[in-house]
Image 1 (cartoon, rainbow, N blue to C red):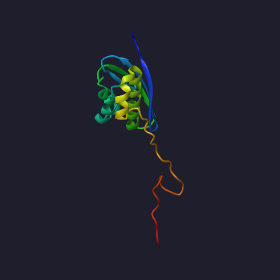
Image 2: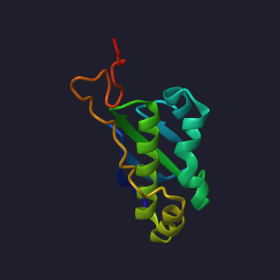
Image 3: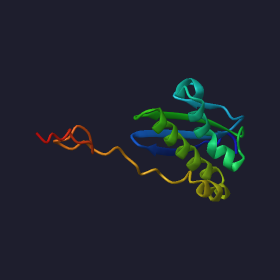
Image 4: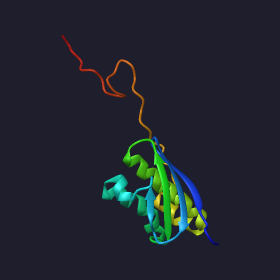
Length: 130
């Protein structure tokens, strides 16, 4: 069981996260940086750590991840899904608590496209009666 690494992919909005999980002391590296340095917000760091808290494996695995595309919130969501998927590869018994918490479900919501004749996807230009 020496040097085992588990790979998983997570997606949210336009973001894609590639996650490698290995037994360790809980170190997280995102695009070569500390998560707080990369995401800049404590709430996004908390989102990333949620799968570990639910499965009570916080500090047992090292995470190396590369994320690209989208914004910081989408990237954090993609990373959470990737970590949850990698944890199920580590131990299949962790699937039930992760599924119950909703961390194994890919968020299908995407940005609605802009339509012609309108300023945005649903907004309309101001109506003028006269």
